[in-house]
Image (tube, rainbow, N blue to C red; front, side, top):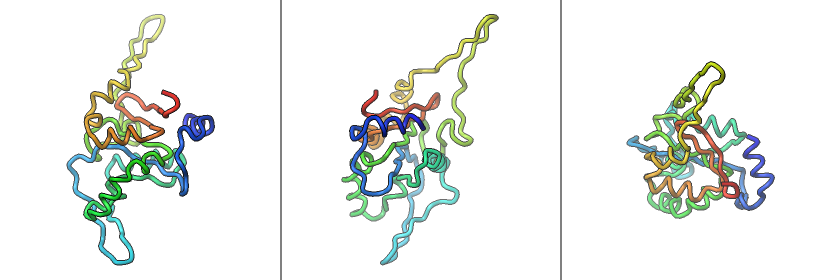
Length: 187
């Protein structure tokens, strides 16, 4: 987490939006063909029905957010009532505030739906690193360039996830081969 602390401490306001509430983390991912989340209609309280257990990707993202020291994870599917059209439109029109205001966005840049976990988190494995052992030394492959992984992924082809990436000031990108951090100050 030194990378995130370093960005926060050294880059100041360049990588941080205005904070009026507790810090949160956002998740950028592909929904896939999953059932919608239902909210109970009640005049005073809107309660969210969340599946138990949550899909692997969501569970893994919760683990990452907790391990980074954050209490809140914003996940569009669970934070926007998809059946309440005015609320949905309002949130869509304010996505910039949600992603710019987040401390960091977890980008699930591999996988095709929320049933697949985050590579390297929990039980979801990464692709194996190629190793060649020779008599006097060992060669390790760093794997493909992570930007190639992203540009070849289904995640890269979606307008919503493109918007998430464009708006996020800090990104924790998880691909099949590696995880890396990127902020707007350091490319």
